Each structure stands twice: as structure tokens, then as C-alpha cells.
Length: 226
Picture (cartoon, one colour):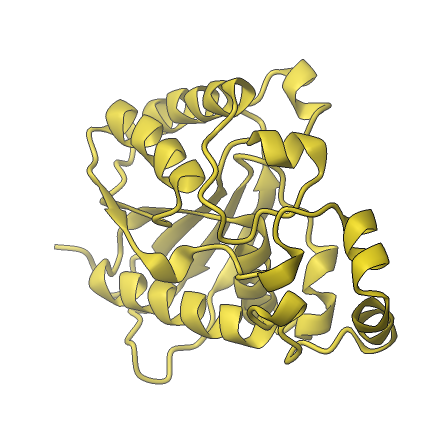
């Protein structure tokens, strides 16, 4: 039994690298697998988490159901003896017609939309006709609030994606969503959010950001590619 004053510690992890990451292509909700480098990054992360778990175990592991996140979570779960729990609310944002394109290709194909976004960075605008930042933030905040309420005073792991995790961290920091893109999250980077009091799903107060994009587990040559 945990004390009501024991912090609830949520470790947010971006998935390992994919070939699309390496080539600068927007994946959105395309179900792409990890690259060889991504699998190696996930293995390095899993080894670090296993060392940390000897002193303070992780209670649960949640993951996006897209395979690049699910594969990362499976590697972590094997090292920790945890079964990953898939949740579609942790998916990357739906980028609609932008999916599969580079930023340069998006600028050429959708000049008016890109000009509007550059001018306003409107968080309610559905990129490529897909999802808006507001929609992404709404679903991931609901998911993480639910996990925190389910695991008071415990440490849990959440494997997700760069875009949607940025919207959650903007929520924690009370950062306007139009500036969420300023938060850099590398492949397998760890960000930690701690809730100091026992959370509840009703009217939950955002937690405290303890670290952002920690990639200490990666070899120096790997960090150069992130």
C-alpha cells in the first residue's frame, strides 16, 4: 500500500527510430516498424530501465498500438517482465494528406495551408485534413490521467510518439499549444511527469515536469543521429 503522499511517477517515452524518421518523412498514423537502429536504441533504453527497476520497480507499461511504439514497448517489457497494454489514444496524430511526405513536399503540395499555419500556428487546424493539436492533446491527457488514477504512488511507463507527447507536455507546462513544436523529443527520449498528490480523473491538476528528453542510455554515436 502506497502512502497518499507518495508521488505518482510517469515516464513518457518516444518510440525508437524508423526508416521514415531517418528520411524525414511524416508518419502520422502509418503503421511503420522500427529500423535496425531503432531496435538497438530500444534495447539500450530497456537495459537502462532494467537497472533502475532493481531499486524501484515499474508497475505498468502502456503503449500506442502502432507497431513502432508497440515494438519499443515489447523490448522494454521483455527486460522488465511487464506486459505492454496497447491504447489507441497514445497514437501519433493523424496527419491526413501530409502522411508519408517530407516537410518540403508538404510545403509544395499545400502552399495555402502551410502559409496559414506559418501565419497562425492554429492549434485547432486539422493538419492535412487529419487531426488538430487540440484533438491530440484531449485524447492523450485523458489517457494519462486515467493511468495516474489507476496507479497512485507508483512508477509507470508510457510509450508513444513525438507529436502527441509534445501536446501532453504542453498541457503539463501550461504552454500554448501553438508552441508545442518547440519541445524536442528524440527517439527513445524519456520525459518524466510526477504528480505530487493522489490524482483523480475528475478535475485532475497537471503534474510537475521532472526531466525532458533524457537520452543518457544511448551511445554517443547514436545521439548524433537523434
